[in-house]
Structure formats: structure tokens, C-alpha cells
Length: 311
Image (cartoon, rainbow, N blue to C red; front, side):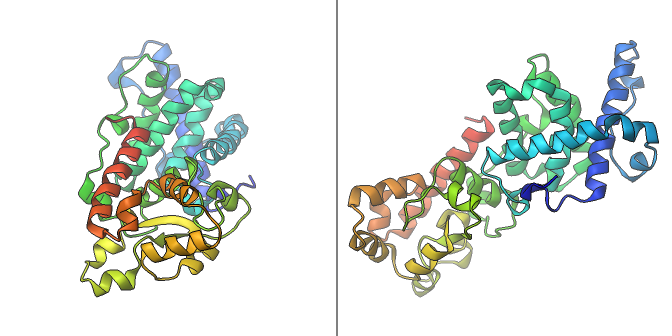
């Protein structure tokens, strides 16, 4: 499976996904035999469950789960999640593969893919896969198929997912799940590089270095007593190529916007590029950090909630 998004996948991850698929079908078979709900075998993927897998279990499902991972990689590519470093929670990959196998040809349909997207972003934003990973995985496999086919209730992962403005503003670690989810959403929805105007998904595909650049530079913020937790927040960062990052340097926004126009870029084109990053134009041109921070918090939260299927 030569996909960059799967490059950190471990043998144990693969076996966990296989265990989820095997135990899902055991449960389904028992359900079809009319076994009472509280007597159904559990869906599970802990160490003992993996050790309990038989050779026939492995041989019967290894091709299907391999294809599930491959189709999962293609699905994530559509979300501008190209590399393992872009994945919010590796455990979501482990669940996505058997889920795709279970949904079969349905993953080709727009309505099904949209529900998978909703599940993916709810899981990433809520942090649910940072705790109780295996029980959450089992619950998702039980609840997701029925909901996808409109035969069941909204899954717990989706129903309980939320992200408050304070938590969004506190996202300062590029390894964080919500941080990665927002970066992916900006790329997916057409964020353009400040300097080249290139769509960042294309730059990422051709392995150009993409960095999260401070929109208001650190030094400028420090000189004005702005808290480190605010100027290092994802709200004050956006993905750009590393070359553009160095071109912009550490000057104030009004100055680097002027530099961009001096390269021959029209003001209208600069505005178009800024909008693709969900940046309010006049607040940036006026070097209004507080106004910018409040407004971008609002629009980023709205973007993420839209992806999560929340109002």
C-alpha cells in the first residue's frame, strides 16, 4: 500500500482493522440468526482480540481490509489529507478501512461520502479518538452503517461532537487533531498561496513544503504584549509554501500585502487569495489583530461546524 497517508501504518494497526471487520461480521451473523441484542458478540480490536484471530479469519478478510485501506487513502486524498502527518487521529484510519468494506459500493455515492466526511471531521474536532479509542471504534462500526443507509440514529461520535471557540483558539500545536483538521479544510476548499496564487493542494501533491505561517508575525505581536497562546493559535496561522513563508518574513500584514502588490499582483487578486484563507480583508490591511482574531475565530469555527454537519 504505497500511499503517503498510510506510511506510518503499523502491522498492529492493520490487524486491529482486520479484527474490527471480523468481529463485525460475527456480530452481524449472530444478529441475522435472531440472537438477542445483549447476547450478540462484541466488536473489538484489543490485543487479545487480535491474538484470537484464526488463520481462516485472516485469509478470509485480508484482501478486503487491504482494499479498505487503499480506498480510505483515496477518500482522504479528497479531503486534502495527503500524508500521515496530516491525519488527525491514526485510529480513524483503522476504523475507516473496515467501515468502507462494510459500506461496499455505497462509498461511490455522494450521499455516503458526505456522511463519511461528517464522521471524519466530528471525530477529529471532538477529540473522541484521543480517549477510549477501541470502544469508540467498536461503537462507530455498530452505529455508522445504519445511519449511512438511513436506517439508524445519528452515531454517538457525530451527535456528541462539539468544538467551542475557546478550544479552537487554544490550538497551538501543529500535531493537534483540530489543528490538522482545519489545515486540511483550508487546503481542500481551495486555499491559495499568498505569493504564487497556486492552489495549495497542487503544491502539496508535488511535495513542496507547506508550513503554517503566522498571519500576524510573532515579533510584532510580542512587541505589543499579545499573549503567546493567541499569536501561536491556529487562528493566527494559515498554510503556505515554505518559499512564501520566507518571502513574507516577519513584517506586519499591511507591509507584506503591499509587497505582494509590488510584485504586480492586483489588489483584487490579493483580496481573492486572502478570502481563500477565510481572512477578513480590511482588518488585516488595518493591522487590527484583535478584530482579525475575533472574526477569524468565528469563520473558522463556522467552516469546521459545516464540515461536521452542525449548525
